[in-house]
Length: 90
Image (cartoon, rainbow, N blue to C red):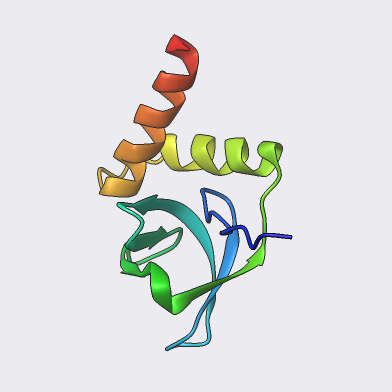
């Protein structure tokens, strides 16, 4: 059996190795940077993060909607709004 790369995506839970913190994923950019849900906004190297729990489709949608509803204007909010719009446009 061939090893398959686990894709980390919105709503997944990851453990950030350097801090030991567990984060919910807002989105991953360029397979290099992982943006997390929470304050303050920020990101980490994807390579420093380990998947703890894969989100269901419902959990992913809930995370996108929660981010999109934010009054903030950071990259996470822009990503969520763009992704939801893309889903509607099909």
